[in-house]
Image 1: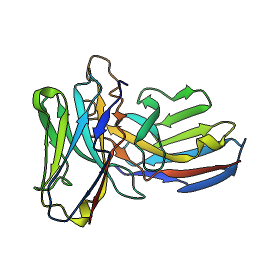
Image 2: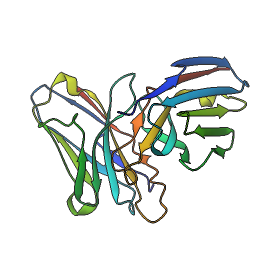
Image 3: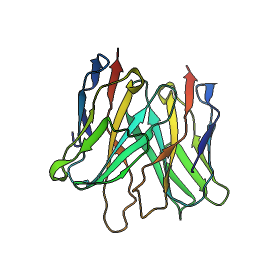
Length: 116
Length: 115
């Protein structure tokens, strides 16, 4: 399978704990995005990487959130001191940046976070 | 700030009917528009992408149109099947050098096709 993969698929944690999610993009894709989706809503943009550089962050990304993409390959999203309001589906997407690219984004299956 | 609205929020139709899902956006300066399908508890599957210079795209029983000047897109599903039941999301990519700001999504249309 050469699609976007995310791990874990489900995470249950207690309030105040730290959690980390991983995203593996499509191998040749140099752009990687993180989104958050709550029940009944569309996904909301969190942050974006061009290769290993984090170029854009949404105001939704509080100081408790940090994302990395070492060597421009997989990415991790860490949430520190989780709160119940962090409960959501965290989606990763990737796209290809090249001449005449449509920048079509391909999404992974998501990580469902439940904070108790 | 770009806002995307999808109408209707929910739709239930008998199998075999043709149907239209609507999407509107407030800022016409977009790079492209994507339609996605999302099954319950799952990720997003890209259905169609229309670039800003295009008017429509077709894939099988799906046809998506784009009227950028009026800020509207429609997704037409022909001969609907129970397997089409899902939430359909519309998303616009802002004109900012191509994809750097993330997609702006609507809340989706929850579609049920009755057997």
